[in-house]
Image 1 (cartoon, each protein chain N blue to C red):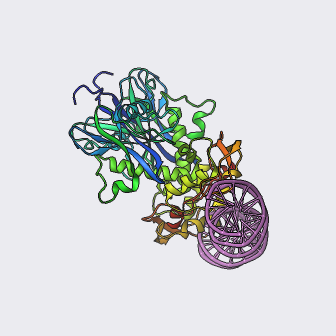
Image 2 (cartoon, rainbow over the protein chains, first blue to last red; image 1 turned 30 degrees about the horizontal axis):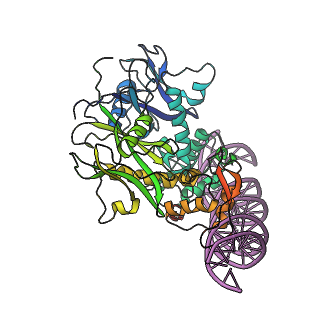
Image 3 (cartoon, rainbow over the protein chains, first blue to last red; image 1 turned 90 degrees about the vertical axis):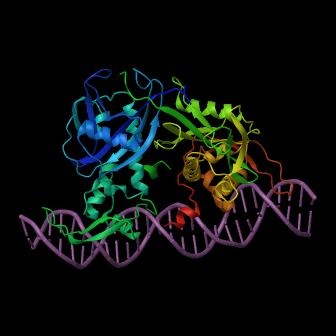
Length: 237
Length: 237
DNA sequence: GCAAAAGTGTTCTATGTACACCCATGT
DNA sequence: ACATGGGTGTACATAGAACACTTTTGC
């Protein structure tokens, strides 16, 4: 029980939200080598007696000032390539989190900055290259959240309750980058009982007018049967 | 970079195969505390400079004598509860593997035994209780493999090529525990090109006769569009 | 001939999509 | 009045399930 190899275990978190009608992820700017000045997913080392998910939430709060108490935090997968950190062996358990309307991030003492980046801008020309293998992690996390919307109502995590079905539909449209038929979407999410529970009152109409919508909160069920499939996923067939 | 907490990182492997028309998983019997005499998933500690997946394959071979060179080995998820091992903090990266027709397992020096157990018998009365949190891991692994068959042709990993479509269908029926319509299944897996490539020759008819079937090998594509859904999954709707 | 498995054809039903249409509000 | 988003109704196309039916083998 004594001479077992002992490795560093870390967590990285991809915290998604929607900013200016675009899917965005929270990044921190490093201010020490390696990758000094580069942007990276927030994260850090797991303490000796700390649950892994708790470490993810703690590091997120320390480095960006954003709490995930209300948001979802789920494990994505573990990245264990021996060379992924040039300094030493670090096995990282990556997580995905979602926040509805997070406050402005504040860079912690270790970081030179912290801000949300539109996911599409990160890989694009002029976007920041990410440190370590975080480009890979972010790509996996993005595909994960897109796919998750197909089978669950996790989209509600992007909305502060109470919310309207129109707001929920806009989450899908932003995350997937495609338009959905409003009427059909309405039926799909209201069809299975327990997904959404109606709330007293109605939303006020937008600046452009329109009929005030029914307000909802997330219900006890989250699984979508049948799933709502992306066009892009269907097209592969 | 120096005083980072260092934890033990382990892997556990759920190696599935089909024995006697039942879904079976490979277990080893412990012969030292804790859980002395109990059955557990094969696994062990990740070495300092070793990729995680490699550690899983190595430990599997050391403890059971079964190589996974031909079979699939994929990461499932990571279990990091601080109390999951009573001795010390161990974070375990669980994997799922599939073997077509593995040789008889041979218990390694650390183990009192190694054998395949029908998955249904493990949780049942008279079945062995599993050590650590391996019941949970096995439950997750079982659901994972069942769900994987819906969206991919991973079922081919249970068959030694060349195989017939009937053999492939029997994999689905055993893993899911439900009957599938032979004709519809045939069309589903042959409908998308690239999933299965026909091979020279035909299978010999079984003892009970029957028309000899076309032989196939796994093709370059593995994704099923549209998916083949279980009844049990549909029923939840 | 009979049983059994492979493979094809066909019908029926369910479900998703597209789109028309009314409702309720702001300007 | 008109634009805008909410919500409902409906017709059409399509995909999957159920099942009949032919083919090819062993006994």
